[in-house]
Amino acid sequence: MSIYKALTIAGSDSGGGAGIQADLKTFQELGVYGMSVITAVTAQNTLGVQGVYPMSSEAVEQQLASISADLRPDALKTGMLFSSDIIQIVASAIKSYKWERVVVDPVMIAKGGASLLQQEAIDAMIEHLLPLADVVTPNIPEAEALSGISITDSESRQQAARRIHAYGCQHVMIKGGHEADTVYATDLLYDGKSFTEFSSRRLHTPHTHGTGCTFAAAVTSGLAQGLPASESLRLAKNFIQAAIAEPLNIGSGHGPTNHWAYQRGQRQENSTIASNTIIVSHDVYAGGTR
Ligand SMILES: Nc1ncnc2c1ncn2[C@@H]1O[C@H](COP(=O)(O)OP(=O)(O)OP(=O)(O)O)[C@@H](O)[C@H]1O
Ligand SMILES: Cc1ncc(CO)c(N)n1
Image 1: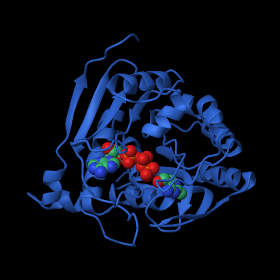
Image 2: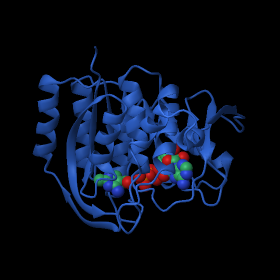
Image 3: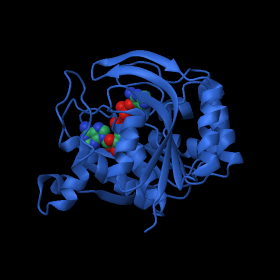
């Protein structure tokens, strides 16, 4: 039996719902062996972020080197990278170790508003990391920061996706979790040729801590097992829908998602979880100029 290996390069969330912890739980549930390079330790719970403690450059470099010397990842994802120094170290490791199937989740700000990436690091991400990415998964504020385009409607969302794609990544998925009051949570994929929407029923719950990390980790799990990007994104959309639909109700603030729910739903025919994961995926009209 082949063991597929996935690596997450991200921050630690002491509360266990986002960051490295969400990534490793997702890898495990989706049947891939998980490895981690920790870029920063955050003191965090469901109420917010109480502290951010970046690792030294040397600590990040050595973790990457140790993995490279022994355990080649089949796919990797980046999450919270915190500074332009860490971004450059990670980008040069990906290039020099010739690691492939790279998912960049351009984590910038936690849901409560705490900064997880220094402002000046956005340029480093565009210059060094995005050209190495197979899949980039910004939420709407991150897509605005990367593209410089204010997203107000579907046309401006398509423009932002085109602009980010032009930085050199293969696929851009602008996630729709932050849209207010829509019936569907719709993510928009651009592969340089056409747009595809992935829609699911928007669930009304405060328990969405770590949705972005979990989603990108599920994409990485699919890529690690050799699925194409579009299939990996479909898997991730199903995984996160199930994880939001069955909240754990842990903590007194914005609780974590349920990383067990997807596999539980797969095992139970006709379960409520399975019926929650109806996905509409279709090509959308690519208006405007390319
Ligand atoms: N309330 C919801 N109902 C259904 N799906 C949702 C909901 N909120 C987010 N999603 C889905 O979860 C995934 C992550 O999207 P989101 O925009 O929340 O990421 P994010 O802002 O990066 O998350 P994070 O807070 O972890 O940084 C997307 O596939 C999105 O459509
Ligand atoms: C460590 C970490 N990474 C990412 C996020 C974004 O959800 C978070 N809250 N914490």
